[in-house]
Image 1 (cartoon, helix red, strand yellow):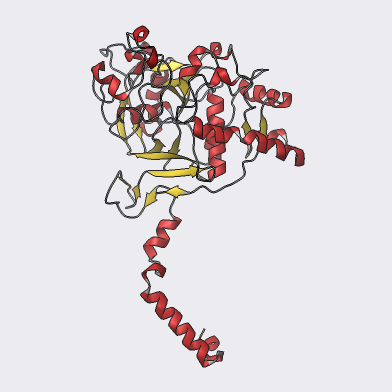
Image 2 (cartoon, rainbow, N blue to C red; image 1 turned 180 degrees about the horizontal axis):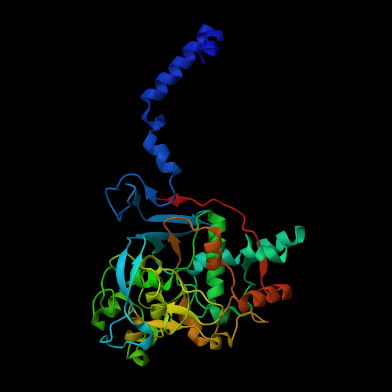
Length: 406
């Protein structure tokens, strides 16, 4: 560099000196090592504890913090909340009022830190994904995607809804997205991951219950008595016939949050988790190493997946932190698409089914994350068949790096 400087005219050397002097003395142009490090860290990770808000200490001296990610040119956003790692007792004790037999035996589970959605996924968010159908159809005109792409880096987008009245019965906007199958929820997380560059998925059943409890082992996140449930949940009250205005979903975040800062973990809509339903799930988990029990129990049954949290159609007992529900083939009896699509459910019960997203502290390898994103078992063939029929579209999301508020 000295040789270059020496070859320049004197006046250029003076200009360079003045520029360097200005940069050194201008706070707006000084970049510290910490700032550069922050910019290179994964989303939601910082090197120093913020003065305000939630911050989860990590063993490497860094901190997990909440963040808001914006999609669709800043028009739609969602917020992720960090959950501290810890151990808890999954399920309910024999003495718990309202308990079902599939909530036991009690089993200790160790959950690593992760992020989970502050609220359930809303129609505002899900409808951005719905727009991918048109995008994928345009791609299809230019390049026919091979069938094996379904298992790799492509996403299936749902067909435009044939009968919107069956799905948007209770409104759109900031209300929870309802009436889609677990597969539809899985594909949303895959689309969101590929479109934003941040890896999202459905939570496991153990992660969901741990996040719902917020550090307590009571029936609800706020205690054992359901008398305060109305402050935290939108649900079916005993006198619903006299309160018809309470019927249907409500905007997310309308009630109080739990101690982790999460809204609607009780009520509003029941939420899909990743697990296959097994009545003896906790017996199976008890046989696994403690550090692995938080992981989902995968299975090939396309219909019998676990739902958690209860919805507006459920009473207090179904909203308990330990309460488990199982999807069934009956939910597919009606459908908003004709012929039926693997994405949509539209029976009355499905009007209280939604989901929220999760994210691991460390990005999962392809072999593992594919289990959260792709159809398994019989559903894999069903999806391919319906795509051949034109029910839905397959393609690669256009990467539009979204803006982020750390």
